[in-house]
Amino acid sequence: MSINAALRLMAGVVILVSLALGTYVNANWYYLTGFVGLNLFQSGFTSWCPAVFIFQKLGLKAETCNCAGMTVHQGLHIIAGSIVLLSVSSVVFLQLEPMILAVTAVVGASLVQSAFTGWCPAMMIASMLGFKKTETAQ
Image (cartoon, rainbow, N blue to C red; front, side, top):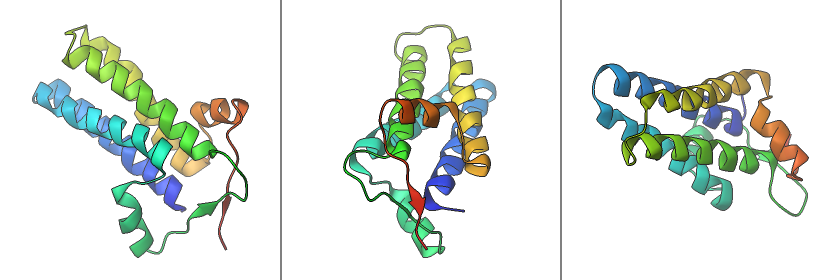
């Protein structure tokens, strides 16, 4: 598993678990969902995420892109992070119907499955928008 796949897996699992906890335990758990969305969004622009250090220590391989511009994974982080932030903030701050968080659950599930399959709709959209593909370093 690559570092990017592990990041998607971790983000997706935390999104789904925090949504469940927010729905069934306490709505304050939605702040964790929002934090994951914010971290995804910022990592799309900065290519920095605290979990990368952990995954590197575990021996996971990084993906590289010998190209100028942003990678598909950065595009995925921007798209997924934006959707998560918009839906969570609309529920938490604007007091809109929590059913909107179903969109966030779909994003979380898509991130989890993409960690195993290597494909998700946001990756396809990012690729169509001109984000560059990466290769796992040997």
